[in-house]
Amino acid sequence: MTDRGGELLRSGRPWLVPAIGCVVLLIASFILAVLLGGSELTPRQALEALFGGRGDGTIPHDRIEARRVAIVSVRVPRVVLAALLGASLAPAGAAYQGLFRNPLADPYIVGVASGAGLGATIVIAVAGSFAAATIYAVPLGGFVGGAAAVGCVILIARARGTTSTATLLLAGVAVGALASALTTFIMMSSPDGVRRVFQWLHGGYTAGGWQPILIVVPYALLGLVGLLACAHPLNVLQLDEEEARQLGIAVERVKLVTLGSATLMTAAAVAFGGLLGFVGLVVPHVLRLLGVRDHRALIPLSAIGGAAFLVLADLVARVAIAPRELPTGVITALVGGPFFLALLARGSRVEGRS
Image 1 (spheres, rainbow, N blue to C red):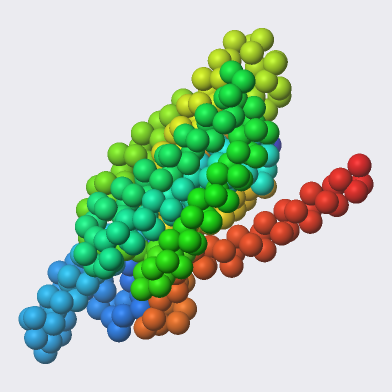
Image 2: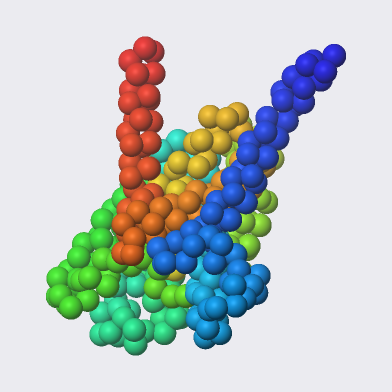
């Protein structure tokens, strides 16, 4: 009787076990990321600094205070920001995949990442010194660039009055390529800024403290609310656009709201974290492999899973070659690249059998 009940629970709620797993993984990754790092602090010292411990009484007060600042004002905000960026990119990826009905879509497919990179590159080049740029300047440039890129894509795709998904994909590739070319041109024209731009584009964090978090949170929440509002229509769109219209779905409005919300989240994440690729591809796919297909569950679980994924990626970036750091985008690419190739190989085998 117990086995039968458990079977019914799993079949009726395929999201339950993945949800528990995502929450446990996020909590574990957060604890590890706070306790471990590239500095000389041990996990015990990190705990003492976090909870106000005073050590064994032989450590000078100023050293204890320095540890506390390093943990509370630097490491914890960085971990929270990484979680927030992952929680923005992964549900955006799930939404893009549902909107385009393409399992290989991710948040960068409509050119938003390349546009954001171009905007931030312009700010860095104009500022001259990366340190001189305020906490708002680079993210603002990235956000404006990303929004401008997706705006161009939408205008191109709606030239005939409807938003064709195929046209969106092609326009995104074209706009992204143009933005990347302009970014390269600016970098080569200003050699002194190449290293700073390269670090930012590959996921190097450019600001610390709690201020970036306060800036990103409104964009992430607004975008997530928009995606959740479109979750059920996205389920219906998996059938066919014409069938969705017959069922009363405002297809064009759903496309625009989904695209706008996902782009808002992606642009905000890229503005503070750089080009953190494959987060929006890997996490939704893993959840789908675990049986989560309904976007009403897939989108929020992608947010939790994406937060855990990026926190772990950032942790690896900090400790892999300590005391130096790798760009977080390098770690996400090392994970996502083989995953993407595996998806392509799997799709080729399926087509071959058909």
